[in-house]
Image 1 (tube, rainbow, N blue to C red):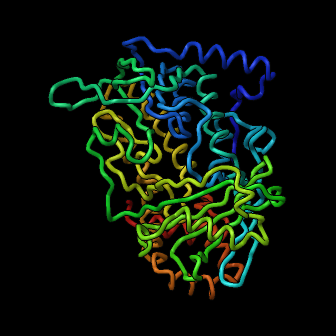
Image 2: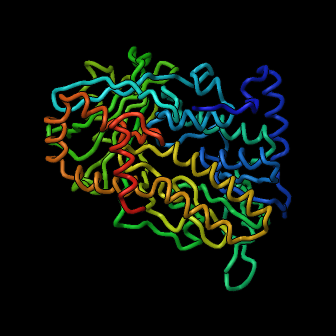
Image 3: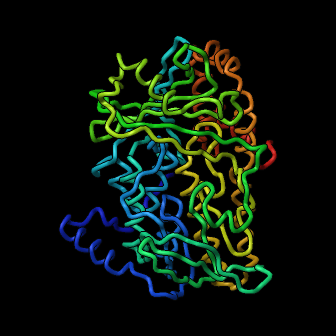
Length: 450
């Protein structure tokens, strides 16, 4: 059964009270040249902010550093699967999870477009997961989680970029904190025995630790834009399995249309690294061509574009490891945690964040740094086998002919697509009540952990 936290969200406060509270928090964000904390979190996206919120709720002294000033944008589809919804509920963000807060909308399921078939598949009714999904622009979602961490007692310092790690000794065997540089030129240090690196793909902490992309594991590049459209009130998020270029050629990518609560839609596409076109196309032009081609139905004309198209990397399937070393835990894109089946990474960043908070809190109690190794071990046990299946999937659909055959012959069969949806969205009960859950759970249990 899905449960919710009783913690109060800052967004449930009276607007004037909330604004005054946030103004006071901003005024206290200035760091001294040297600060000391239990934990320093690098990056205030959903993973970093969620880790800080959970740690602060456990009474830990947490400092979060982010080089940007919020609200800030992030290239993303803005979709929230039921896995994300559960993480929001765990943070006490009930109104946001249910689409009752500004910037948040609820969708009942997934509309799949493939071949000549369009099929609507409601999110499955399960004991372990909510029965609904949603959408929220990252400008809204990220700040909501970050302010929740502040409300719980974490200290979030905006505009502070991390310039490198601090080490306990010359051999760099153990982390001792980080160095920072503010955008106004000031520099300083935060001393902490544990660092959570949630600074994105190719972030500074991973580079200083020597973490590089594992080339045998998948990644993708995404392009997305926001379009005004009368269809922005849709109850379904849409996924397109047949992607073509301006000449009608099949590409090994996927597209999406996600409705938002402000009268716009997030329209985007992604291409996998297993695709022959991965580095051979202009992603913005491809998105513009694809969106214009379906403007008759979706109103995705250039005139309805509300901001320039943007692109970004999607690191998948634990393609940056190890997830823990020398007192540093990688969370979210920093560890390549995006689902290879569907390109969704928010839920995995937040789930990893919650586990990281639990492991870090226990290690601070026992004062045994070896206890931090459980983070890497348990995360691989939870989703490593599933990510191995995702790598196989990415290798297969890297050939557009394979994807075309799958959509042409598989799409007409609803029971098969319900199974595919559960697999691709990673939604099954631990104690399965139907055959589809048994199949998916067995596959990921038998697959070797990534």
